Image: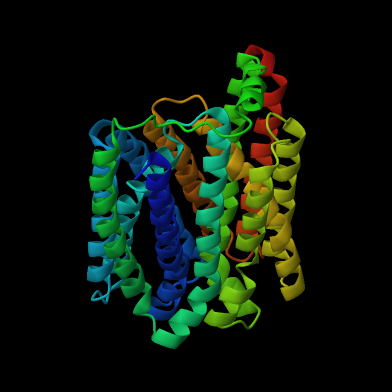
Length: 398
């Protein structure tokens, strides 16, 4: 077995992880609504808690993976999530479900920084472009399938499938991780880890041509914009049960109609994988951010099914470029990839916390103001736009 074939195994782990975590965490809000009567404000509070834990734990878990090994981190993550979900399947209180959600989030934090590091490890610049491209397409594709089909699965097999399906997948992941760990030990030292791919020279020249200040600025802008993208994502996912209810959509229909942005993001990843014209181009990042703000506002404040579906197309494209930028610039030129992956994921966690927290606070403070949460989060997104522009203008002093 070669290093490249090992990476095929890592991509399988990634795809399974994306399906399992998307299915559980995206439909957890539907579960809390149906089982305990949670409305938008309560679900936004849950989403904020989710994001806060993810931000803190991702940093620590990225360092853990770098210090103690990638496979130990993966095994810990899959085992923690599996146990948490099996216990949650027997839990009948809102408090208990919330605590176990936090435990599952903590377990997930061991996985994403580690998987990002594994697929990026020992790659040339052009190889990194290939690996990040495959990585993004895999998790986005399986996540989109999970969100699209999750409502139908729940209606077919019952709400208990929210726990048993991901737990079963995590058992498979744990066994596959043990197998890959054994194969990796046999491969070590038998061949060079990095396998050059066509176009290495062009990629080397592209990155070498960037002034250090510009390269640092793009990394910082990506780290800024990606949390704001997740401000929008986690806010939308948390209020999706309420949006679906206002449009008369059941759980299955909500999965079909509200997952469009996931497929649009997947399409953007496919394009960005093969086309590198967006590298170090501020106009593309700025345009994506503007599209993010506009599409979020439309989805939240224009309660029509056709606007919901069309705006999701724009939202998905914007999210694709913003996320791709963050991960690509984070992995490029970093030796401690697990730690940098942790920073990338922690930034996502900050966004996952800030948007829902502000939305929940606005609904609490202004309960009689229509769309108070949507206005507040849209204003926060505009603040991020200002920060992006300021960073670009100051790039020569970075």
